[in-house]
Length: 403
Image (cartoon, rainbow, N blue to C red; front, side, top):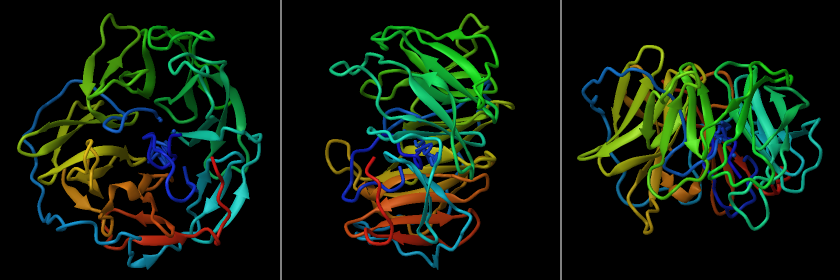
């Protein structure tokens, strides 16, 4: 299930049932996020965003960085300089019966309009709220076969109930708020080779344009101002190629490898690791290409753009625990304008501890969910501040929903 904070990176169950599951997703997304894509979707090395003409610049240096030595210093929790007291922060809990959760107070409130679903729900961050659909999909025994289209709902930010939009096999954010893309396949079709039919609709279910036939084997990851960012339906080993596609053009305008984040106006992807890994951000409207250089010995595993597009949050991984698994990670935030990186204080932890991260509101507050042996923590941080605010969630403080 895509995590609603992470914007899409899938992850197995942890030591505690996941209370906050995105864009989200981070999303998620979060994105509160998938969610993050839940979306959006995709392999741990890639997840999102956009393209146009490019104007290359030299890599920008990272100043003031000193990597912590040895293993993560907080094996059973992060320590913040403040207690999370933001009563306005509430996050969806994606379980069999979704609910709103206020980390600052522990309050829970069921979300109306969503019938109890045995498989749980996926939350996909879109402008103004979340698209929500049941997690169950596909045909039993056939991992790439389409099942019957599932109901899709829209949950507006802070709304007490979700409203049904339509049915689809896949859901993706539109380039504008108040809209989303629904993609469907013929029942039992092999999505690796079949062409899906995509329709942009309003959050009220009203079609906004004629249906499109997608290239076979691709789905929409994110609609942008310069076309649809398409991702392979089935991610293959290595870095998958994402394609920026204008349905009216004869050919795709550009292909990206190693996409880690995308929005309606920006695409971020990884490039090269000699001597340091780079993260590139393309502004689709201006064609400006900004470069951020990661710390030595690290790589970017995931990313999420802030709502206004000024910041890119990155999951920066260090070392290797075998089979490509990172030993430790921390969250860092890049300025999209300059490429300068800022470490999110207190987030140097085991890579297994991070459940998801993203920008769940309409402001520049980054939220992360972290799971440790005895507790789950929600951490919040705003760029430019030195304080990490933390709320602790234990099994006795609030009911956990198994998704």
